[in-house]
Length: 189
Image (cartoon, rainbow, N blue to C red; front, side):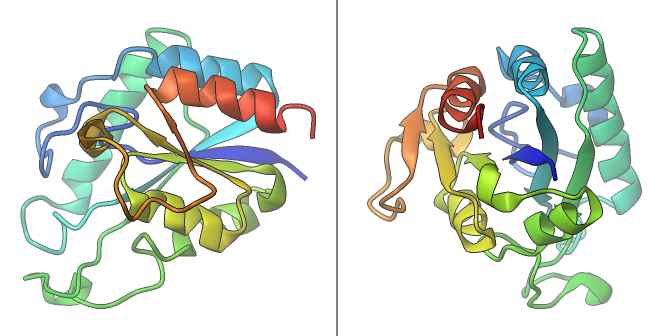
């Protein structure tokens, strides 16, 4: 079985921009490509799991989301890095687009995206980690069975450690610092 590092996209992998809808505005967070390369060098699959309620809210389409993710892949490739798989939740209970306006099991803090990825990529979640910039990211990781959850001080995480942060989560300055922590904590598993 594989081990994985699950990453939130906005605020962790790329700069946070509320409801990013223009691929040209995707900007990698410093150290993101190096973090992904380090994780791969240490045997981790890197899987993005991202809430994208902008689809349900009618701000952008799934096609636009695909173009944004493609742009991120191009930016990463320029530094010799690559994501193994992309998962997103297009739902929101107050969405304006009927087909996506619902409660679901994939919207973080629910663990649905991580569990789906684990099944499709033969991942042992007990040897995997979740890196996010919101407590809902960490809650999804812990609910799925990840022993390591890291809140980064980028994106929404730059507001500091929230009172609601799960007790067993740790706080790191950015994705590269978090990746090094994951490697140290789970690299020899």
